[in-house]
Image (cartoon, rainbow, N blue to C red):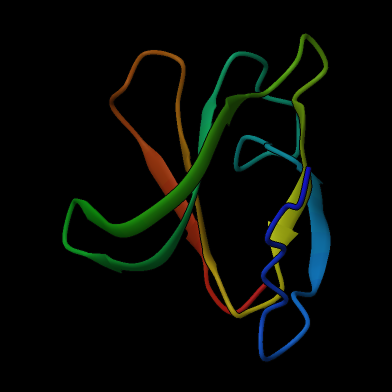
Length: 88
């Protein structure tokens, strides 16, 4: 049986994003929700790519994210605070 296989014009490049969510005093913040998006406008994530939760020690990991500049947003476990990092 013949199959069609489409090869993209450009190769796709991927990377990983990992980090630690911390409080202002430097202590880890377990349970925070972390999002990767193309941009952040006010409280809205535009072009959301992935989401995860920080583990019990505050660490998060996105093992396969398309190579680009991203905004990474961490929202506190209680949902009241957030931190944003651009161009990761």
